[in-house]
Image (tube, rainbow, N blue to C red; front, side, top):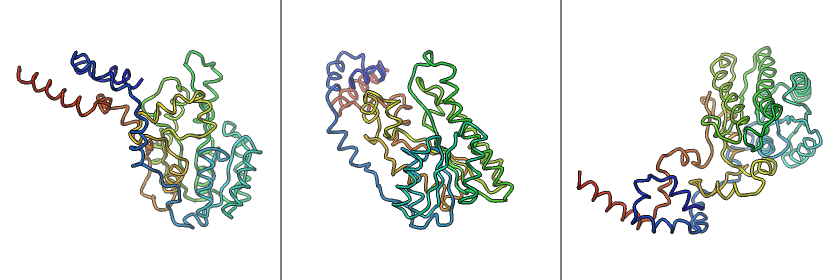
Amino acid sequence: MAGRAVRKDISPLIWQQPVIRPLAKNLTKDHSSQDVQQASFFQPKRELMLPKGSFDGKIALITGGGTGLGRGMVKALSSLGAKVAIMSRRYDVLKKAAEEISNETGNEVLPVQGDVRVPEEVSTALDKVELELGLPNIIINNAAGNFISPFERLSPNAFKTIIDIVLLGTANITLDVGKRLIKAKQGANFLSISAVYATTGSGFVVPSAAAKAGVEAITKSLAVEWSRYGMRFNAIAPGPIKTEGAFSRLDPTGAFESHTIERNPSKRLGTIEELSNLVAYMVSDYSTWMNGEVVVFDGGESRSLAGEMNAAIQVSDDQWDMLEKMIRKGNSKL
């Protein structure tokens, strides 16, 4: 597979040469051991980066905080001293996560049931958060929905569901909390979880790409408009981080995972702990100069896919020697 992909992507001026064609067959070999060695240079740190107590006195609201990436964020902020409210539709999942994390960190984690798509449920949930913990000064829009599908196979309702959860949900939370904060004259840090394809677009996840692009537009717009109220807005666009829920819908066969690792310059997937550390920094008082930014956090994957000739990384040293001779020979005729 690797060899076929490279021959397709690399300039025809290189791969159509008769002398190079036999060498290109070698690119189909298994690079797994090489990938492991390369990944060893990019090993993740799993412990918390910020000092203990960095969020003492802070109140955080995290949507979709009961599982996956959201749960990792909850654990990180709670471990650093924050009181955290987690919100989603599935109260049983929230309650279990809240109890487990609170027992581990010693700080309060409040489960709050509510559907981000429904403004009335958002308002009721925020009433409870404000009553039991106080008005949040950290808001993380993490709730999401996504699945892989050709666009022509989608129903209008399937498209609407993703838009409603990701884009409308972010708007509902931000608008309701924002109005409360403005009234109370309290500043806050907002963070949204986007996707690397929000900027470029991507086939087969069109509803998510459209919704995430809208989330990034909200982030950049309100970073200017609501800064006068002491609020700042940022977003993170993570690359592939394996979680059970997301990968079961996006990679049901497991083929995507191995392909992703192969094409990533870091030769591995990201980890929940790495993302949680970045999240913690971006909503902390250590990053108050960061506002209106979308941080791509993907091990270099998006840059790898963007370069016209990046597939040439598969070419061996011997092949480069031969290419160099061919290029010099061609230049001598000019």
